[in-house]
Amino acid sequence: MASTAPQPWFTPGRVGILLGNLAYSVGAFAADFNETHVYNPKWYEAPVLPESSFLSKLDSTPPHARFHNGQTMTLGVMLSSMSLYLSARPCFTRMSKEDALRSVLHGAIVGSFYCAAGLSAIFYPGTDWKDPDIAVGGEQRFLFAGVVALMWIGYGLERWRMGSVKEKGV
Image (cartoon, rainbow, N blue to C red; front, side):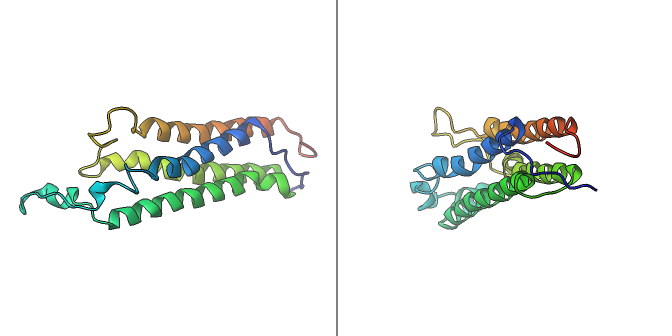
């Protein structure tokens, strides 16, 4: 396959993928470094529930919960970084149009993982979209669904743009 000149970076598709990645990687730190997550006082003290209660195991959130919160925030940054690398790789490397499209596809897939996992979290026992004491906002389902959609719209726009590109140029 013939190698083409590097692709342009600022295309609608790649910008969409960039914005989606920024939304969940930077957004996770902005949303979680406060009293609802990392500094949540409820995560320091376990509630008193009957020993036989199934919820006693689900509702007691020891400091290890903060560990997993940190783990997921860092995972979001790592997935976002890999997604951006894969999406931008055709801009800095000579490769065939097919390889460039495949790289952007992989970027959209990796970029979707974090938010797709967030959408699936509601299926675990004892979970909810937000804590009952949060009156306004806090739900992530629309943000997560929006980011997944943005990744795939970005890929679709890039596929459409590159589909109309001749193999010899951009």
